Image (tube, rainbow, N blue to C red; front, top):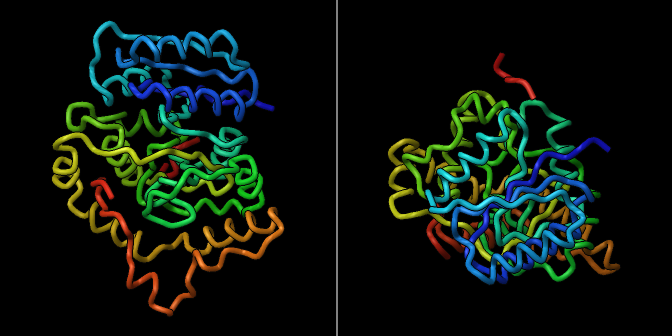
Length: 304
């Protein structure tokens, strides 16, 4: 098997979430995968102890870096991505819980389609990539290993997303460099900077795709920093409408249904059709997305 891209994990301040993330990363990622724990001076004493213990026992090739003074989430991530040059990078949120096989599936997604610049896995709290219900924060699945097996059975169609989602994303290095990297001067959050990068990539002819064969769980969603949504609206006036339209049309409805059926089949029970009301019964249209859009709470250049 070819060497996987480096996993870039920017550390946060939530110690328990970091502990769970590192445990799942170690268990669900092939031994020897390179991991970079990048700390923008955010981890406290307990977080540092968690990192030290994990580094001593992990099967992965892991390194840890810490700035003496923080420079902000987006600037720190852009600095780390810049250090990776044109290499592809797997960016994982510090409170994410990757299911087994997540990294291998994302890399296979890139191999199938050289026009894909960002590949995002399913997530229980992934907004446009959420499962089992789109646009909602669903509970963390009890059996991530079983869910990963179910994802493996899905056809890799790699449907278009409005933008990549921050729980986990594989970034194509050559595309990111051509698009200019992250805009740390305009955005304070990875949430908003990733949306902006995704839209710039799409403007250059690249694709932001769903990786149906991978799943990464998360306890909640990322969100914007103060002023981020106003900055997004000023640069991309149609973004909020585009996201809202995607959530209401729900073009991933059939893919989510297939995953639910696969989960049910592996568990030997009837498919969960109650999660997916039949089209035309008015249920989905009446309810709409249960959380507000816009981040508020509730290969080669294909154009060449």
